[in-house]
Image (cartoon, rainbow, N blue to C red; front, side, top):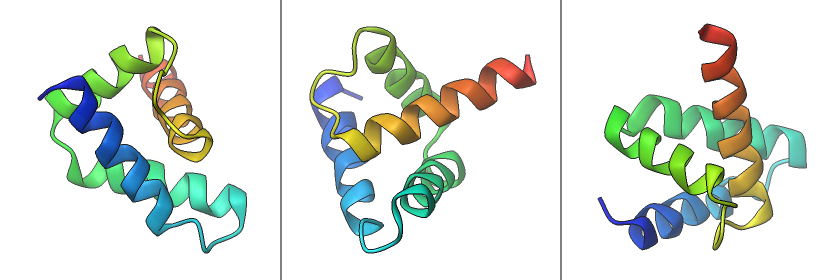
Length: 75
């Protein structure tokens, strides 16, 4: 999946949860991506984040960071 599409989708998910408190919105965005994106999509998001996260809005970037931290902790 191309980079622009992943960024757009992550930002759309973050917008959908933006009505929640900031911490809850980040958690909900990360949970949605974890549950509904396939591993290739999550890997692509991780690569976008590793390359600076260009295009990701702050809430989407925070969710991607949370997912990266979870992956690092899982080993």
